[in-house]
Length: 114
Length: 113
Picture 1 (cartoon, rainbow over the protein chains, first blue to last red):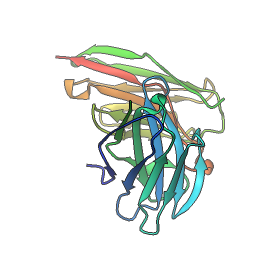
Picture 2: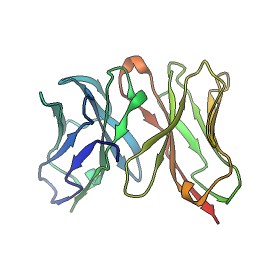
Picture 3: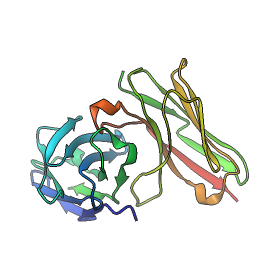
Picture 4: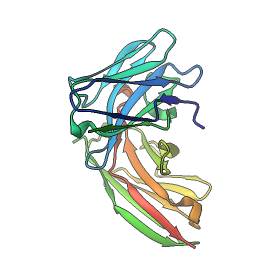
């Protein structure tokens, strides 16, 4: 167990809908990262937050947004969902801001868009 | 420039054999190269990592070899065991850019008893 908790584990929703994925980082970790894993694109970095502020951004679609709250948990919001958004979404956390050198991944949320 | 190319896509090794997975990168600004192991239904877990000022790092049965001039690095799993069967990802990072890990496409390793 990495100590990173993601909910829900599975999510099935229809095209056009909006969903929120939640991540609780390991105790004391200030950085949260979101990744998308799909068969065709592999593991893709989406976004990083550090202590409530956005620190790095990857290929995150405009339909997607994230935030980190004062208690350090993070949410990834996906809207106007398309079939192609079906993927595993991972959250990772680390104590530092500079990189994933000590990042630990959660078990992921499997999103299925039908 | 931002890609990390990983090969092979899949690998079958006999128990006790050596598993070798290779990665290549283009961006010379990368300064941290981790390997992750992922079991089905689980998130990736950090296995071992290296920085470009070192040519080799060993942790137990796992060794990273790093060739800075060729911009290549590889993972060697010695005495491979069935429990090592998993998907392995190499990755690269520019630490000053925060947590933007660039992952290879993954190698599915199967160790046969």
